[in-house]
Amino acid sequence: MIEADFPIIAAHTGCGQAPDNTIESFLEGVRSGANIVEVDLRITKEGTVVLLHDDHPYLHTYTYEQLNQYEVRSSISPIYEQHELVKLTQLLEVAKQYEVALNLDIKIPAAIEPVMKVIKQFDRLDHIFITGCSDQITNGHMDTQVLYNTPREFTAQEQAAYTLYATKVCQTALAGRYYGLNLDYLTCRQELVELAHASGLAVWVYTVNLSADLRRFIEMGVDVITTKEVTLLAELKTGR
Image (cartoon, rainbow, N blue to C red; front, side, top):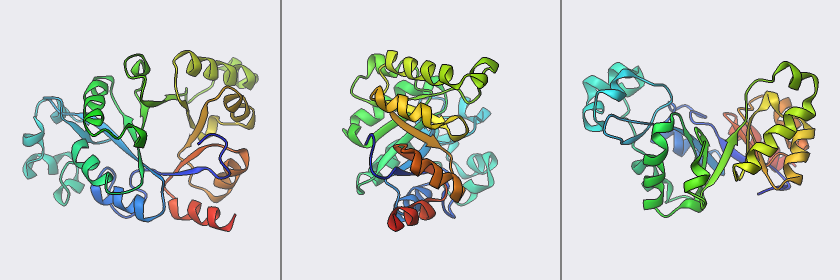
């Protein structure tokens, strides 16, 4: 994947008409031409891994079965009046029918081990990437493709000397035995891409939606672009 001719296309959850973190949204990502589809993960009271971006008090007080009852889930968000909360196991059952990888964005450290247990049961580690709360995963799960989520803001010193920032994040990723870097696109510059590639690290950028920015990162040679504008990025690939 490193230094590919064109970046791998990763669909941000909710890239189409369906709400974020639903099976319908995953399928829209697949149909739009994505190679990877991103979802957000949290856990319920008893440790069931569910697709959900934001924290909610009910996650800490209800089991999955209780949480997924209409009266409860619809109070979390209006989207759950029409959609059930999705378990990671359910998503993996659907995803294995397609030649598409998953970017599992883990939202809290407590979800790490439950997530790892689920994905190893499905024996699809070659189709899984981990982002989000990824600290220490590589220590116990060497066979997993884990990305280091770089700081989203520069210190004053790093802002003045970008080389310092680029060097620091690459050294951190290498020391942590990460597969690559997952960068807010506002922090990604050519210097970092070149240094990461020279170090054997993949470079992912998120969430890039404007045509000019997509073109810039294509030319920059990043490995993966996460976007909600999957069709636009796929068209740029076809035109290229």
